[in-house]
Structure formats: C-alpha cells, structure tokens
Length: 311
Ligand code: NAD
Image (cartoon, rainbow, N blue to C red; front, side):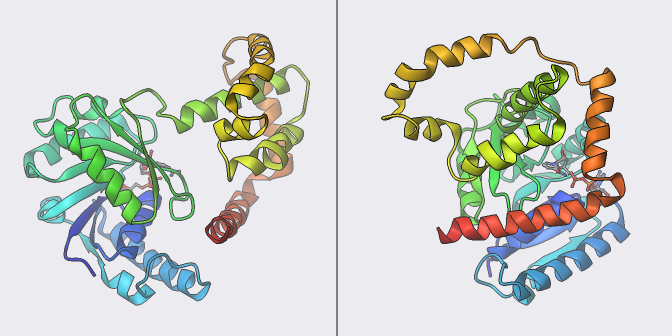
C-alpha cells in the first residue's frame, strides 16, 4: 500500500473505474462527488465489483480485493479531497459549462504541484483551462470505456501544460497497468475519435449507397479488420502485409489513393439513412436488451484482455 493520494472528482461510471485502477496499485484514492448518495452507491458498487473480479481471477494488481477496497474512501468536501493529493482525475459529466465551473473552483483550492487530469472525451484541455492560474498543471487523460479492460489512455496536453506533466502522467498510467499514448499537442477528437469517426463516416457512405446493410457492415469490422486490430494496429498490419512498409507503399499506395478519392464528402448523420440504420440496429439488438448486450461486450473484452496477457 502506498502513502500517496489520488483524488477522483465525480463518482459515475468512469470515476468508479479510475478508482479501482489506482487502488489496484495501492494508491490512496479519495472519491469526491456533489451527491452523498452517489458516493455511497459508488463505494458499494466498487466493493462488489472488486469481490467479483477476485472470484473470477480477474483482479488487477497484487493486492487482495479487501486490501484494494481499503485504499478507497469517499468525501463530500472538494478541498479536503484534493488537499495532499499529487494527482487528480476529473470525471464529471461531459458538459462544458459544468466543467468550466468546476475548474474555476479547483483553481482557487489546489496547490502548485497537483496534476489536474480530465477524463473528457471531447473537450480539448485549453477549452476549460485557458483562464486558470494553474493551467500549466492541466491535461486530459482520456480513457476508453470500460477502462478496467480497455487499457488505452490518450494523454493530451494544452499549449500551456508544463513539459513534465505528461511525462509524469504517462509513468503513472503505465504503473497502474494502462497503456498511455501522449499526443504532442491538442487536436479536436484526439486520436481515437478521429480514427473512429473516419471509420463511421465510411460505414455510413457504404450503407447510404446501398452497398451493404448494417449487419454486414459491422461484420466487416468484427469478423475482419477488428480481429487483427485487437493485436496489431493498421501501420504494423501494412508492414506485415507486404515485405515491409516500403514494399507495401510500393504495391498499394496508388490504389489506396485512388480508392480514397472515391469516398465522397463527410456525411451528416441525419435524415432517412439515420432512421434506417436505427431500425436495423434495433432489429439486431432491441433497446430493452442494450444492458444485456453491454454485459456480453464486457465479458468478451475481459476474455480478450486475459488472452492478450497470456499470448
Ligand atoms: P456519469 O454521468 O456516469 O458520472 C458523472 C458523476 O459526476 C456523477 O456521479 C455526478 O453526480 C458527478 N458530478 C456532477 N457534477 C459534479 C461536480 N460538480 N463535482 C463532482 N462530481 C460531480 O459520467 P461518466 O460516463 O462517468 O463520464 C465522466 C467523464 O468521463 C466525462 O467527461 C466523459 O466524457 C468521460 N468519458 C466517458 C466515457 C464513457 O464511455 N462513459 C468514456 C471516456 C471518457
């Protein structure tokens, strides 16, 4: 068990995951939320999840579930929560006004040392930190849901972020078993969503043009590209698909360019195609089954992450 403290601000889905991840390495985790019942509920859920993970042999770290749970406590005073912490992970809802208000409040109470890290999926750090006195200590650490099983973290500094802050954050994320990547500067959508949107856009065009239906489009990913991508990225895939990357470019770059030129403008996801996609998806998975399907997804990801560790 470590004597170093990490504050988690917001105890929803992502706040709970981060708490478990940091506690798995023995950090002292203090969870703050504006709603006391939310903290109580989060602590109960965390205890239950840790036990269940232990029973299934999936608990991270070397400590027992009981030891990990003993690292985590709740707090309804934000000042008390961040005082003495060397790192804080903000996990409040994705609402820019709410975040700006919170960062203004934090600016008044934090010291000059604490790293202020946001889980935001969509806001570049400068958007909520530009006006802060402590803006040099702010960055984004964007997790992927569910973070306990999908380890990627996108670390995104603003132009004001002190140079050592991403480095320390990367080391912390690595220590607790996540897979951090550090962007050299902030950019809309970071990296994961830029790539995800490029894929979504092309899927949309293929559906809109009547080339494939929704089920078959998803099969192209889950039974094709996705099988590889769980182990190798697109760049190494290219390297292996020829005699190295130079040979790949020599063989395929003209074709890739020519095909890409036929892709058409960025589609707006609205109108009759949107209705059609929703209808087909609801046939595949009715809205009342979403929760069941999410549980199945989490089980698959758990098994995959186990397998990736063993291979
Ligand atoms: P959530 O709605 O599940 O939880 C938000 C929590 O914040 C709630 O417990 C709420 O009571 C609390 N809260 C609200 N205002 C607060 C305040 N002023 N101070 C402290 N706590 C406050 O949200 P979530 O899904 O956990 O998302 C949190 C952040 O993580 C968002 O920025 C989101 O973009 C990001 N994120 C979410 C996902 C995802 O898939 N859910 C993935 C990656 C990143």
